[in-house]
Length: 280
Image 1 (cartoon, helix red, strand yellow):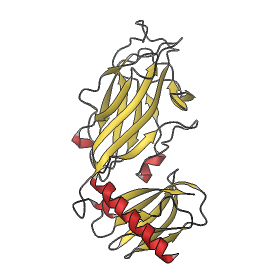
Image 2 (tube, rainbow, N blue to C red):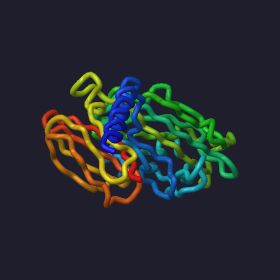
Image 3 (cartoon, helix red, strand yellow):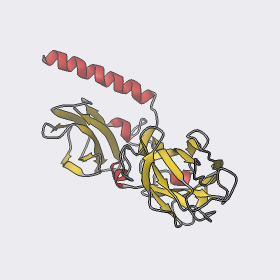
Image 4 (cartoon, rainbow, N blue to C red):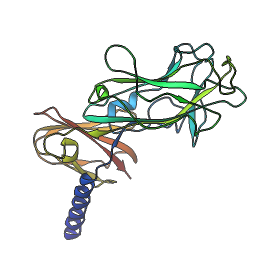
């Protein structure tokens, strides 16, 4: 049994090393609205899980209606909203660079909503346009799609970044003016990024290993040096926390099955890493 465990561990470490060499961007936060909640429903940075989508400028309250796959955030009262009414989210990008945005907005049907939008960002100071971010919407989930829109470097490694999709005209998808009942829906919002270089050439994020994953009874967290280790659930609630200078074996037998996030901070450098954990 012990030899089988060691063999499986070696295989896991080999797979991890291969994955490091072909690293994909991490999802920092996402809003896909699987339920009727405005809160983020995924992402590798625990603090982002407490962030909610909003509108601003005088729209109706957000409701949650049929989306592309599950639900979507929906609002009305977009009339006379050019340059004032918008969808808006906030999130953290600490430890990440090359931040990219993907989203889907639809407007139309029996109550045509705003057709024209652009994306703006804010870190410090004024709202600024994201280059080549203007787009139009229609009564479908394909026209108003942004895919991997690269945000400016000012959004890299920030404790707080604000993004908004703002109306740029009062024209509805049917060519008339947007009315009070005009509908705009937003869905499948993803912010992804690359890990900043850290303690070694692969970066601190990649120097941390959590296994097995998925796990049932315990997890092993490979660290090197004094670190604060925290475990969060999908709502951003801290479940466990400890400080250690050596690799940690953490019991998870008392936890319910689901998705969790392991957050590690190196107490010497201040660098942080987060790992998604699935408990069966």
